[in-house]
Length: 351
Image (cartoon, rainbow, N blue to C red; front, side, top):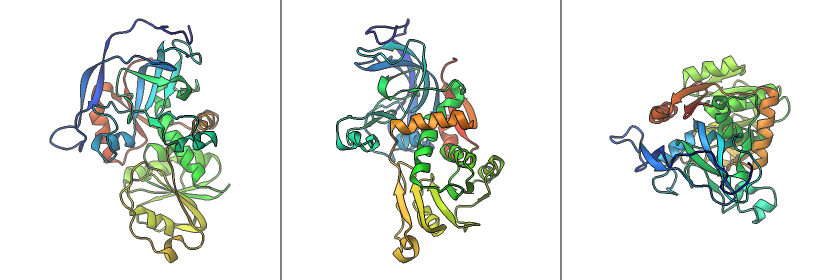
């Protein structure tokens, strides 16, 4: 049954979920997140209830949990790279069927009527809301999602592989677009975690030379294994002038260095939702010669559809490290440490 109010499978009333108690450091004296019992959410009009199979651990989850981002909801359940199966519908739903495997992303809802939504820039909607920040996310056994903001997932990807595509991949794709990388050009990538290693694959598949700047020696080796042209520390001078660059590291001091490594007319895209302050820039040294500095704010649904299609066609897939649902805190600490080959993913339930 698709889209019928009350359509459901047999469901429990309670579930396990990770909840942020008080935002703070993961390595503090008291962990800011704990596993609790919560009521299974009820899908509202236009929403579906999803049984979570896997959920990627994104760096944004750290920013939410540790308090880098303002609190939008008390006792929030984080997580926004969610793969799951539809198990119930709210009213006025018709897009999916019970049992369909879908993706639940970071971008949860936009108003649809403001100037940004009407002009194809819904990611800039002032009324937009986000899974795992404004609304409980996927570090839980069940989650709801508006049907218009869920993704159909290519059958080529299993649930573990598909999870990081839903934010790391999609945001990486938008960052790649914002960086204006020319065909056959050179791209610098700063930081080499979940999003960066997918962006590198996308660029390499299109004949672009990728140069990686990251502090982790394991990450540098991983970049070279993927086929990147070079890998060095974040302070290094580029081996060749760069047409474009993307910084995934949330460190503002990287920005002047990255700009200095660009060719005249080059573009640096800052991909993170949070970054430490950028130092004072010298116009003559950093921006002159028509260099461009831009940012990335979320993504549009079109970005997501395009990327998932490209990922299937070009065989772009993350390297994943599976963690049991009960070890979410351990997985988050692993992501915070950095120097990780690929992405961490929580296994919440079997397919």
